[in-house]
Length: 151
Image 1 (tube, rainbow, N blue to C red):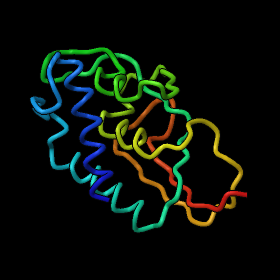
Image 2: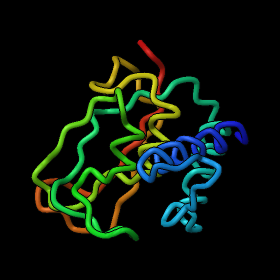
Image 3: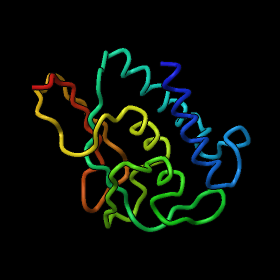
Image 4: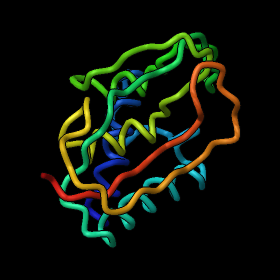
């Protein structure tokens, strides 16, 4: 759990350092240093370990369009750190005018994702939902997790 948590923070530091022309050791975690990001990262690692998850299969990642306000001004979506972290991972942009993937979320799926795309054939055993508070025009603001056995 500790190794994965540190690895996720390192992914974010490397991305931020590249964007800012710096080194990971010199990076100041702006938004990512917030308590909710720390809770998300450590909580994801603790949860996956506690549940005994052997592999994480991630559906197609879809990011919104438009702009996001960061400490350094307005940037187009996907946010620079998110895009850097997801290098090599398939990503589709939608017409939803909101950030749908944060750098924290990107780093978590990059750390644990075994594959990205369609769900493999499996027998669902448990299903969980997390519902966000933002109303999205084109889709529900819901994260679904399925624990299952590969068929």
